[in-house]
Image 1 (cartoon, rainbow, N blue to C red):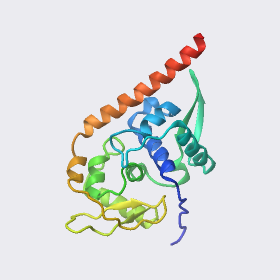
Image 2: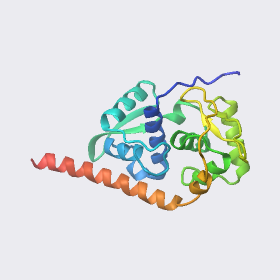
Image 3: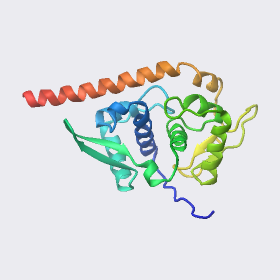
Image 4: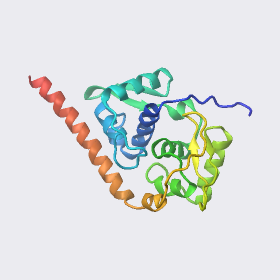
Length: 215
């Protein structure tokens, strides 16, 4: 492959942190760049995540440090807050379009997805016009070495795609019964819950800061 892109092998923690920053940059721009509290809430969301995790600040901090060394994230300070905040550099490191960033974000946060699932779950990340546009985006990312098409499961209509930032992937048989159906439901509610969790984390951080200043 000409001009082959060098893809790093990232840990599950790094993938979750990077994906969360990519997601919140689009879905909650008022809280981006993100504080540590906000990032903990985003990584540990119960919705729009597979698998659901419970990372502490130390785990996320270690992932942030290693991602920063690799140039995939950077820190930002200033404004009314002196707290360190974090932002992703994914589209700076890799020359890809916003629609492609959205696809990578979904694969980072939700695991392997079919074109139909990506079209359904993309939501506020990117508004695809048609399913054909999703397929074209997937084919381009696969051709450039960012993602891989997985073998079709028995009885499955669509093939799934997985990212290659955790190394090469092989098909693993899992119980995906009714997964696509559940993915299509409650998307608006999931979005509201996730935003409330992030707002709560930011309020807690501001409250803690105020208490320190008072005492």
